[in-house]
Image 1: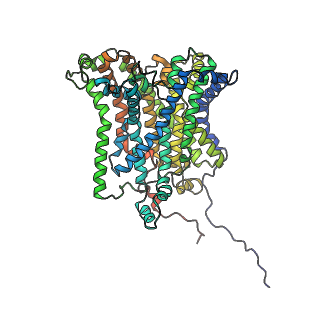
Image 2: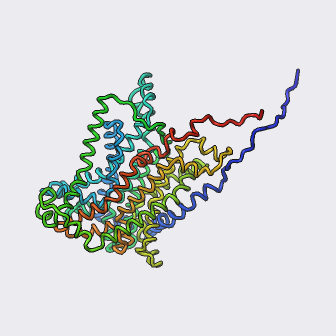
Image 3: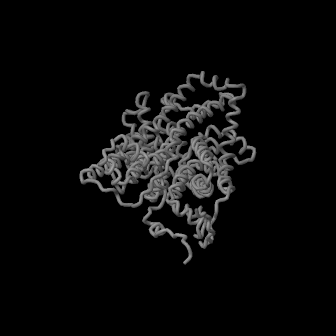
Length: 568
């Protein structure tokens, strides 16, 4: 019987000169975001919880015994329930539209602030006040909120449906796969990741509903539509410190539980479109899709047209007749700029928005890379994503009291730099979630070529280069959110902050006599963010869905991979 043995062989392959992962790198990448979010959001949140528990649970019991508080809590729950309803409506509309290259225009209303949206819909309801009063005000507010956010859901879901290979669906039908199973195994995986992200974005807007109610609802109707954030703002001086903190913690808890609904979808891998061509569709379906797009755009543009027509009336004509009557002129624009406050507010708001849009990617990109490619343990990674999701929906009211105390001691209350840092901290969690999904969609060979092979360059920069659409989306979204902010500036900066939304809200006190002047200011304040969103529309569509460049634009993926064989 012959024996067997191991024959040593020499490995003649080229030595590996890549960037091998180090266990400390993910921690280093997470550190800037952790420090910023921890100091600005998490620590004040923890302090609010501690304040609310002074004396046990009595503060919570005392707050919830108040009938007005319970009414506000129910109304806040309504807004959080409305968020998934809007996403479902967007999915149904996306299914009906089919593929269309101009569909990105439907997401344009995200550039319009909640304050301007409320003004536009209040002007629409003005003839006969048919949507005001106890019976109509909820419909008015719901339509305004749906107008602002359902277009984004349509665009994202339509892009997700476009990413499904038509051959895969046909093959499933040919093999007799049921419709329910096709939805679960083919269509669902293409929609879950981006759909969950959109759901969280809409939940953030629903949890922070404030200025929409403040401007759209007349004073006599605001008690009917009161929410927790507004109630706290109006009555915080009447509440003790413990009950005031308990009310804000309740507001956060409701939003956090709702946000966890989308957590499962965020853990799924994003689909990647391998081509920019539209999927084939029959002539009848294409005609129907175009008709639905035209109808949707016509409905979407109505509030902006009403706002523009009102601004082109003189103040007297607008007060006496309304946006549908005569009396056109540019007097309202002259009065809007006459005081000089609008011009200064535009400059201040623009500077803060640009600074925050530049600072946010610097902080969020390394943290998102750590979650996507940092090599963290699976449970740690999932826990960090869950914490990030909950922090993303922290209402400003929950943390603003402690931040105000600290900024007051440091003489930073209302300072532009302090406000910009706070805005950036509020934007970091959402940016991390969006970028993390995009980074995880980058082909593995691109990362491994820099990490293990001899390809020059950092894996982080290679991933960023492949995900420029997501990076542009994060920056544009942060610019729009800071530009349109009202709550953070009101609670932390006050009128001294010079936010453009403050100038508009001051005119709302004499709504009947200054509606055209307010509309003129709203048009001017909307031009810049709306123009930015329209100019970057194609990038935003890809950034909200796959987040990566199309495969056709990556020549390195069309080449066969380099193989490390034996030397000849």
